[in-house]
Image 1 (cartoon, one colour):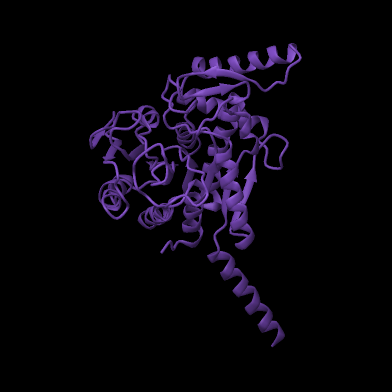
Image 2: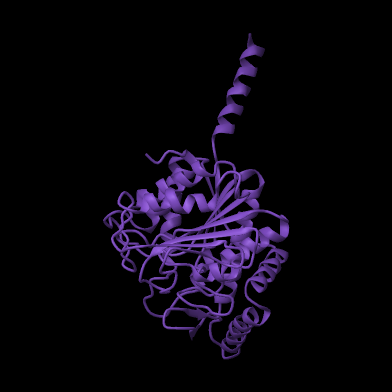
Length: 367
């Protein structure tokens, strides 16, 4: 009887373990080395607030998520070969000259400050009115790229779902232009990594940031085994993708503009279900083996940098619908925009929306 009870206990433990999803979440606590000298909405507090919220959730839901800090000298720090590979993928997404120019600018400015007896961290300037960089911005962006790449490999392994909470965002960065808070295109680099490591892999990219990720679209339109769909606000930065369209060398880019004040129940859900999801995956036509989400949270009703009316809980619903529609493919979520940090913001703030996404991924029931 004791032996029977012992085996029953083992079986129950196994079944619980199989039904319990652990979501790896990668972040870089040293991202604060990329910051403006004056107030800027794209700030280190974005990551701090999200991690604080996730740690509280982790305490309540012990074992459901695994936070992995990849800052230098942390337990999850990248090996040199990982960072070198991340740089190679950035070069593939952009060009050697583009990557090297920023790298040298940061390195030279840092060395000059050190030679002058100053702190190595210093503000260099602005690339455009919205996009700044410091002596450490290149390395912060390199670790962010490596984080997205590690998230891909985790999802392609036993984890199946993963998240990279990185900053600055990257989806606006085109092959030759940093803009819109974005310096390098992490999503494009992660996609290229996946195509190199897993030949012939079909990859779908969903961009739910409120702004069109013209950089991802530009880079991926020449990759035959990829699809990219953006659902974004009409008449907002970067003032492109302003009509419903399918284009690209392989007809693999879709733009879905939505009007201001669109809410989940009034317009958004219908566009997502009837237009975005079928493009991302349709049985017998296009069945992706990896999905990457450019997860921006500036479509929140409370976010001051756009005018779409989603609630934090809606992002859980979107993530749930995505997983329902594509149940077997690995999915990677990478942070893009989302700037509302005010506690008790109407409809929720960035940490609330990230948490709703995470809860939907591990519990698969946002209702």
